[in-house]
Each structure stands twice: as structure tokens, then as C-alpha cells.
Amino acid sequence: MRRVITYGTFDLLHYGHIRLLQRCKAHGDYLVVALSTDEFNAGKGKKSYFSYEDRKNMLEAIRYVDLVIPEETWEQKRDDIERFHIDKFVMGDDWAGKFDDLQDACEVIYLPRTPEISTTQIKNDLSARS
Image 1 (cartoon, helix red, strand yellow):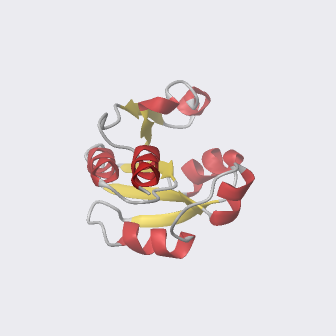
Image 2 (cartoon, rainbow, N blue to C red):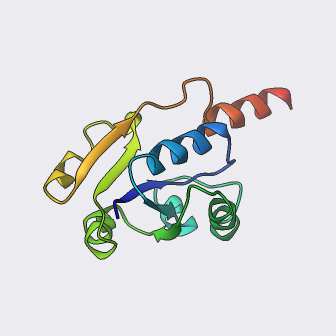
């Protein structure tokens, strides 16, 4: 079984997220999603609209996702790869090159983002309408 992992906040879930998860799953048989906790996001200066538990429940309802785990630190990725026997680490290409140091543990793949949609864009569009 080929195991894949990806990381993210997945706030304001949209079709770009779904496409990313679908393409991640296409790289293997089992997809682990490491979901940023509210505390980890706060440390990055980010605040999600939906709580960690709500975002986790939404991800678990998506057929491409096999397991959702908490992302609590930047440093946990190597441990996650070992713990979950990961073969491929997949991220959007906005992170290109940032995780190349993991290539000794598994294959690292950067996928193109869905260009016409992002959570930031949705938030900005909603603010502009107010």
C-alpha cells in the first residue's frame, strides 16, 4: 500500500481543496491529512473561521481522505512520515522547495494549485462585499 501525506489548514473548504485532496490520493492508496490545529495557527498569526474539530469533521467526510491527524508543529513532519509509513509527501507548489529536506525519508511532490480559487481570495471577496 502506497501512503501519502499532505498538510494544511483547510479553512473555508472549497473546490481547490477538494481537487488537491483528489490529486494527493491519486499518488497512492491511503491519504493522511495533517490538519493545522487552532493553537498552531495562532502561533503562525492565523485564525481559522472554523474550529479544528469542524475542519477535521469536514475533511473526514471527503472520500479521498483516509485519516486526519493534528499538525501541531513545523517540526513534526519527519516523525509523521516515519510513524505513518509515508511513501509520498505532497504539497501545493506555493511551498515548492520548502520541504526538499524530507526527500531522504520519502518522495516529495509539489502539485500546482487551482489558480482561480483560494481561501484568502474568498475572505477578501467577502470583505469587499461588506
